[in-house]
Image 1 (cartoon, rainbow, N blue to C red):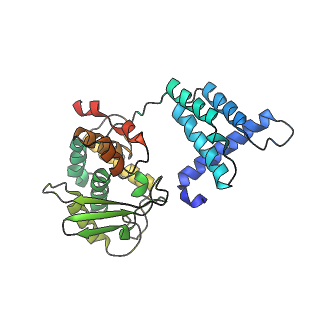
Image 2: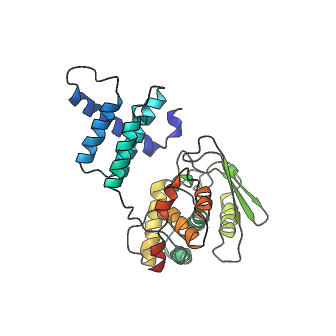
Image 3: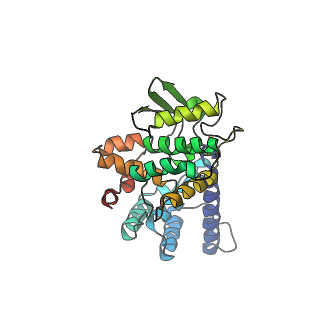
Length: 287
């Protein structure tokens, strides 16, 4: 296991968590080395975080960072202790965190695609943005898979056979070295992701590198894509909390509304657990 498997944002977050944990250990053992760390230390820190008002999911995320550090250095992981796991489970039940981000549903997506020419982007950025949005929705893509990130899709990861786009995910979040292949079929709609991707690729050219990139070949940064996305939301008059991750939330919600099973949604979105259920917002479809 190496640090290369972490996205830059995750690495920064993990470092911050580890520094905070170390500061906590020093308060427990002032004046001498607090190591080795055991499950009792972890339980005390979990309790401290809970008393500070943190949500169960946030505390669990911080424990993941600490666990990663122990595994990185091939040390016994105190977070993996049965008692610690039970404590974390109890905390998640006692203080669940509700994700307030809204799903990007097809009606809003189509409205955005129609109004992209009104956003003041260059012609290249218009075609780029439309392709990013449409492909991200049908392929359940994470923002990091279309922007400059560790798991950013490359041009060579995508192949087109007739009216079918084949996306080969050689690595993705929680992939653990297991590749995944997704097939996207063309439709007769003006919003067809295959047609929009073909239009974009004609402008992009055949050079290797990130699938979605600037004219100079550089990957699209998350910040740039987020700003484009926010501009589009303002143009279509969308109110409420949305982020680029709302595309993935919308994909899961629409899939569930279309009758796809839990198992299929989990596979399409490349979730390693039932976490996809937190993305399904069926009541939102009735708004």
